[in-house]
Image 1 (cartoon, one colour):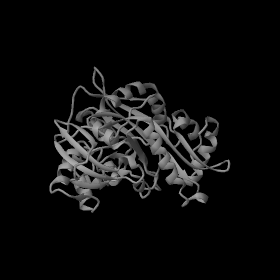
Image 2 (cartoon, rainbow, N blue to C red):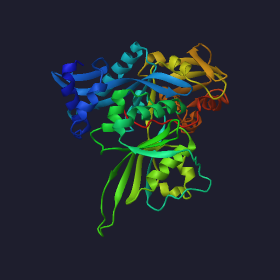
Image 3 (cartoon, rainbow, N blue to C red):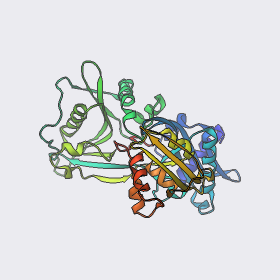
Image 4 (cartoon, one colour):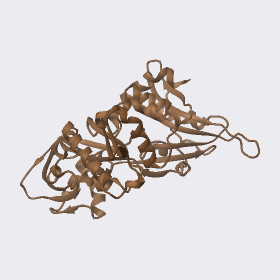
Length: 397
């Protein structure tokens, strides 16, 4: 797609999704869009299908890896069920392979779409809704007398927030490195209310932060009914995590707090005396797809030793199909083509789901998605790919 075609591209994205974007979103997103990584399908001169990929550095088990962050995928309603989306996905995967990117990731607007293009749901988010007076912590909740809270505007301190985020990013698979443009979108996205910021810090450094908005309100009896929306909370250690949550849950005049995207293993569940009061709801989060299977599996770390052959089925990327020898020892692994007999047979989306370590191969085998050809091979593969903590990406791309 040419730079001059971006307005038409954006209009096609909005029409395909069926919802008008908030005012100003196109201008906010444009600095992050690389025309050379953007695809458009045309009917004559009209754009009828869209897809793009951001060049990201994402945390995976054992380190950071270049990952294509796929987004703005859509086809106009008038042109669906004609193979347009499949053509876009196939072309994009070929382009990513030519660029040398071994992994792609996305957030799915509809969870039923991307499995057929080789993506697997690699992690689950949970949404919280906590009402006032229902957030007492258990005895022994972590504290640190050196910590203090500082309230500030996020635009004034985002470099300090970035230091905390960057220090934490490698700890959990699924998070991507942010430059100034991504931080600008995080803090000033047109669809969100103005953000407030609180920083947990000791005399030496910031150890955590929370970004949130407050929507004021009154109930029918005139009682304050404010609602907090937590946009992001990142902490380097348990005391900072607990202090930030305590601040949010104790704000005056607030009736409820909602946190729409938190990790599936958020420690808050263990801090509350009554964890049912989280009212947690789980949903699919990040979806992952190997673009170059051998390179992707050779780039990550492993939780257990493994030595087996996988028969992989990948109709979208023929270069991934076939038998692969995966061997890992002392945390590092290698995945290469082989002529040896297969120990396990599986579609590529099973590997995508398991790649970040949060979805077990064993669970997918119990669903009938994996064939075990050598006894014990599924368990061995599942243990090797597992990782702690669970994958999570706090910001959609």
